[in-house]
Length: 151
Image (cartoon, rainbow, N blue to C red):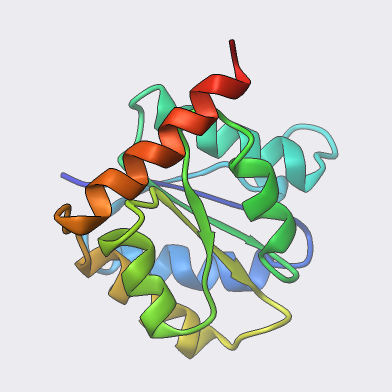
């Protein structure tokens, strides 16, 4: 069964709760790493790293990160070696994040899109799989440059 990590900051708690309920309604296992689940105040970079690290460690197959714009979560999650997080605000980007870039994390902006579009984007992203083909060499090149930075 698919396991998804979800995380948000204080700007996105309502959207996160609605997406969490939406996914649970589809019988998807979701573990919440959000700021409202932490014992002490937590900044969004800490949440993004927790989710990205949990995916890297194999605890979850995919992750959803939500902040005001999706930008900060995406930037931070991409700092974790081996993680590809994509900020998405339209269905084409959500689909290509998986099909062309094999992104394990989708990042959404609660102040940028509405909840119904967010649900559509999550569905589109979950229904998409990495195509490989011509994109394989590109994703491998991303990994190559990433590894070079950690020598």
